[in-house]
Image (cartoon, rainbow, N blue to C red; front, side, top):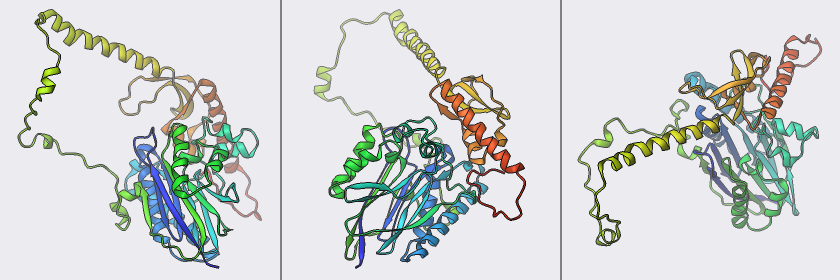
Length: 426
């Protein structure tokens, strides 16, 4: 019996972020979501590069072949990101998750790296087909926190494996059987990082055209703090007729262009361009607008004009500035204090170097002793909601540094087989 996929995708910026760093790719034989990270370090470009390599690898493969193709595509994406960073060092720190599948008509080959997810909805029950590579997932696995607590944990953004050019960050790949009537869900943490599996499961029955807006609505109800990418696919008997499509930041690029020409920079107008040509005259006021516009029968005195034009705006600026500064001093973050990691009160300012923060608790952990991924996180600073949360973060980073040091000074065993280090130690 031949099976096929009927699918739909949705990719949006959410309600908080200013740009969409997610990308998606769908075809009759592949469904992939990539969630870029790195902020100013071009997370949107990283996810687009992942989709570029996945799309290039798409095709009809069967069984174990699908796993080989998916693993090779992730490795190629990592190499491409490394090449871009080498050519432009300001991109250092960018990376992307990747999750999804290839489909051969009977089985799916799953791929996952990071904290985006692939689910199976069968007979009314939702189950995860992938396992998150994140710090909070490790806490859930150990029974230290619940799934609900993981959604609001201050360290939920710490990912242990990611496509960022480091070859030791390898994906999970495996085969899974599917049957007619199954529904597949591939999504970024804009959905699964804010909505519980139980809530997602309740929204899954029904036609895709109805389920998709329901899932987006669940993310919006939680404030949609991150980009939202969702792919829904139904497994059905017979031949499918879907077309390959690209969504999100990857849709802004020519994915067939040479790697070194890819860029998501927004063109900026040249100086003076806005003044070129005569400025259009303002449109005359309509009679109705003039009729109901407020008027005054008395002319203001000069000193009143001065107060309104100078003193009042100055007071507003001073008051607003003090309120903003007071707000900043209620914030905390973990970042580098010279060679060590410390807790700061205030907000980081790496652009204008203003005194907007100060150390409230120095640490003893050396930044250089941390795994490469956590070094990047610390240098970019880690926001924490309180001093207590910052102290917890310091303790966890110390554990990571101790583990790295133990690996570096461990005595090699001649018969032991070396295993990849997922954190980038050494």
